[in-house]
Amino acid sequence: MLWRLLLLIILLVVFVLTAFIVLNIGEQVTINFFWTKLTLPVGLALASAFFLGVAIMYFWNAYADIKLQRKVKKLEKSNQELRAELYELTKSRPNATLPPETAEDHA
Image (cartoon, rainbow, N blue to C red; front, top):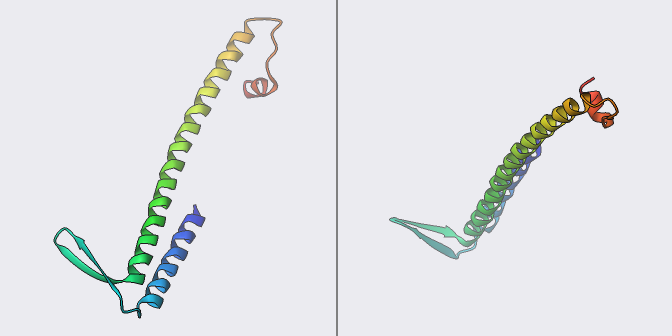
């Protein structure tokens, strides 16, 4: 989790440095967003778009990780329930043997 914070800090530093390096170019980009009119240097606009894209990918990845962790927890719970059921079923049969990890879980 710490590497994600470090990645965002590095990207922010790169964003600021890129914006200031290219700020001296005289060309401007005008962004019309509803009633606001924003004039930015080309470099700042490109750096902003890049940083926004990376931030979106970062949050998308974090969301996917959270979803994956939830699925893993659900599967682990299901696995434990199935192992408990298998243990109960094999207990009633005298000649049945348990897999090694199941026997350790319920010993």
